[in-house]
Structure formats: structure tokens, C-alpha cells
Image 1: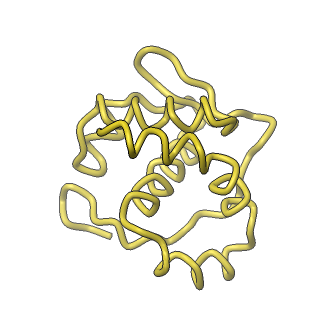
Image 2 (image 1 turned 180 degrees about the vertical axis):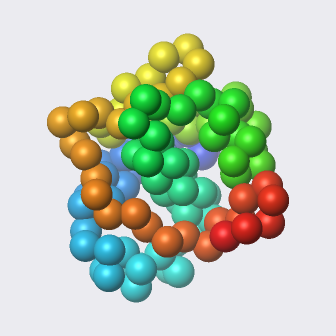
Length: 115
């Protein structure tokens, strides 16, 4: 992942958090307007939110067909920008104080081709 993308995610972490706090109907109206990088980031956040015990970067990468290092870099950028997420050297967990109960239906394809 390039530095421009890292900085973009860091700079927009608060906006992504605000988006995730919108009701699901509003999210579904807005998501087609978002670029693929943001849609992909939202899919990653959905996967982490669904995993009660967190999720390894490798497992996320396998699920969406991206590189585990890129996943870690994206999540670290969001964390640096203030997004409430818990990160280790190998995995990510949703911050329990900011549980999101709204799953966004994104159109980002997984490695298997499923949406």
C-alpha cells in the first residue's frame, strides 16, 4: 500500500467512524458513492466486527483476497487517525467500547468471487 493511501486513511479515520455510526439504510444509500479503497476498508471492519475473538491479518486477507501486510498497514493507518480498534502484530479486534451492530452490505468481492 502506498503512502498516499496510508495518509488518506489516517486523515479520514474519524469520517469512517462517523459513517459506521449511520443507520444501515443511510449507509446503503451512500456506499455506491465511495471509492473501492473505502469500500474495501469497510468490508475489513465488518469482518473484524463479526469476529468476537478478533481476526488475524492472514484470515482477513484470505477472506477478501488481499495481502496481509496491506491489511495491517490499512488498519494501523486508521488507528493512528483515531479509529477505535485494537491491533497487535498479527491480529485486530474491534474496541469493545465502540461496538457497531450495523453490518454494511458492500459490493467488494471476496477471493472466492462472492459478494
